[in-house]
Amino acid sequence: MDTIYFRKLYELVQIPVFAWNGRDRFCLPEGAEYQSPLSEDATLRETAGQAAGRSTGPVLLWEDSEIFYGVLQSGETCIVFGPVSRHALLPEHLAEYCHQHRLTAKQPLRIFTAGAMQRLLSLVFYQLAGADLAPEAIRSISHNREIDSWKTESDAEEYQLESSEMEQNHNSAAYEMKLCNLVRDGDVAGMQKMLSADSFDTEHSAGQVAVRQSKRMEYLLASLLTILSRAAVEGGMGQEASYELSDLYMRKLESCRTVDEMMMLGAKAQLEFTQRVRAAKERRDKPLYIEECKDYIAQNLRKPFRVGDIAPAIGVSRSYLARRFSEVEGMTIQQYVMQERCRHAANLLKYSKYPISIIAEYFCFSSQSHFGRQFRLYYGMTPNEYRRQNQAGRQYTPED
Image (cartoon, rainbow, N blue to C red; front, side):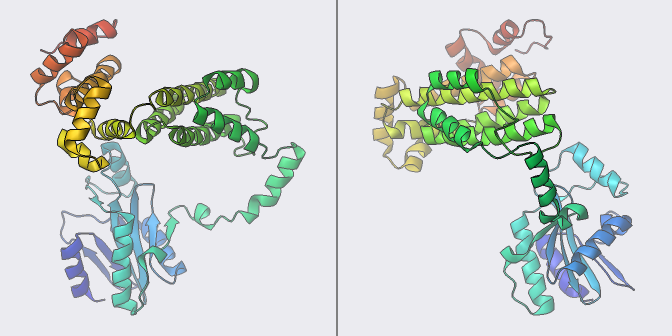
């Protein structure tokens, strides 16, 4: 085992390495301060070994949607890079991971992308096997061997039999086309008529995507929200606003407990997306770059950007954009940015328990007092007063 090569590689990328064969083990980083889950968890070690043995080249082994490993076999030696995580883990996720693999202390995982791991594995594979493997050719496999080995053919006949017995077919194309047209056109009256006539027909508008009705409805609503958000963008609703609205409905879907609640949520989504497109179309008489300016502001509202950054980003001159924005909107771009930040901050004051100081920082106000002054200009009261008026019955600690 060429430990010198792996030591130099570790110094470069700082990704843990664990390698073993029938006789020896090798682990980086070294020392008592680091515990490798592959050293502590024999089941994980066996899974990684089987993953490496089943493949002729490196693979990405995914433990869940965030945590993964790079695995490859060199002769009798199994080499594992990781664990790493695509994003910073929540404390409870990290605690669960450490408990699962018998680690005695919480050890933050290095953040590393799947693409970067594929490039690393391609390099190591070339060093060890002399073969030039394209990074994108390195496949991913699941920690769940049942899912990884599942073939659609195994269930296709049974599914078709169930569908024929229930006279079930995929006749949702016409419904979907009608739905998309209504959203794209911003046809609020047409959507209201459709909802009153058709509701959301889960029994006949789609295939048997799940056995339980509640799970079937959950899947269908997730698909519906994807369709609605795309149709809304095509109809003229801002991309950021459309996808943000879809995300909000997805989060609300997670809290639904009954099929009736899900159906009501689906109907509400269909109507709201259509209304948003209608409003966007009514603003269409404004120059396109004004809407592009607003879309840029919406995407960067929680970042400390400068107004001067907007014009180059959308391809117009700064002076021309500033003059035309003021003419069309009746306010300067800076005033619009401040108005939008205060409007979104008002929503947090109304619907969340975040301290006012955090809200001020979140929307890039220079200080809490600056936030208070600007908020009073638009709402005629302090953030504290606004929160008290809009959250009657809830107890919050007053802030100056």
